[in-house]
Image (cartoon, rainbow, N blue to C red; front, side):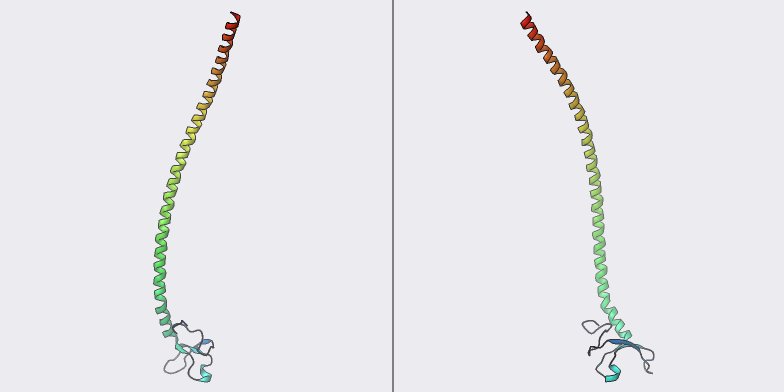
Length: 143
C-alpha cells in the first residue's frame, strides 16, 4: 500500500501480511477484499479493503505517472530525432572531408611526380655544368 494508505495493501497496521479473500456475505456475495490474517481472530482494527475500491485508487495514482512517462517518451523521441539529424549532418561532412582528402592525395601524387622530374632535370643540369667546367679547365690549361 502506498504511503498515503492508498492502493493495494501489503501489510496490516499490526504488521501481518495481507491476504486476498472472497466475501461470503449476502450483502457482498463473492466480492474480493484484502484483509489481515489476524482480522477474523482478533476483531476490528485490522485491515479490510474492498478490491474494486483499491484498484480504483491504484489507477488514480498511476495515471499521473503514465502521463509523466508519455511526456518523457516524447522528449526522448525528439532528442533521438535531433541526434539522428546530427548524425546525418556529420556523415555528409565526413563524405565532404573524404572527397577533399582524396583531392589532396591526387594533388600530392602530381607534385611528387613533378619533383621527380625536377630531380632528373637537376641531375642533367649538374652533368652539363660539370662538363662545362671540365671543358673550361681543359681550354685554360691546354691553350
